[in-house]
Image (cartoon, rainbow over all chains, first blue to last red; front, side, top):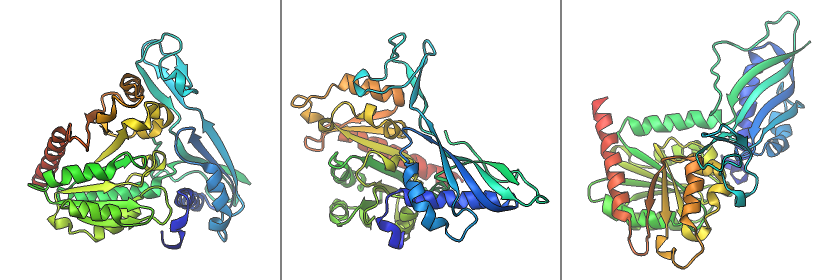
Length: 141
Length: 225
């Protein structure tokens, strides 16, 4: 952490995204990264707006400098285990009970997502494109 | 030519990898790692002060204290009988695997059975950053209110153990424990729950017994492998 220790937690997250972006870019023969697509759930605890704030300084001198961020927000969503109704709990006063059947057996189905989905790159026409199949990839739960 | 390159990689990947290394350091020595999270004032340090003297009768306990500044909490943990290391995050609102890795360097790992990490007081981002510990523990205290599972779903969802502290205050504050439990259950059904009071000592034996059993299981696992 050193000098950056006084940061919000989005700085290390921004650095992590940069590493992933550059790794993916290197595997695709990119000359420049133009767009970055991330998916962030409303209760993920991560503020991508803050990541964008750091991006200019940390990506300077890399292929990803100047890339535009596109954030796909995923609303907080619950699914009722009894009637399969899905709903977004918005007011704490309403709680998590299913608004359709009134049941309390519900599961969080969306809202915790937090991952890099894709990048758009300018590639040399003769370079191989597409992700490296050996590259570790997983979707967080 | 512009090309779309699919990636699908967790935003916290770099931290997750360091957390795995921390876990391996604990596992190779059969050390049980606990990550205690809560809002400020919920009683994280007080719980450590309550359980460490009982645990240290048969376990060697290390404590990593995460704080923005000051070493008060590490001093309290050391006074309770633990080998304590302080991490001052210098303003960061949570611990990360990298900070825990550096703290592990300062602990006598070959002479420990149990590692307790006390995270920075905060109900938001500590849930996002794995540290490599085996059990994430959330301390919820009665005066915080029964709405916390509804306001901080990510935190309540990501823990294996929930400690409800300050239960001695239940008669004096507005805390609908049924409403609280309903919220917890929707997010994290069957989460192991202890109801305790550091002031009266209520519920502490059950918590201590659970930690002891978990530590014994970790140690047995390390002997087998």
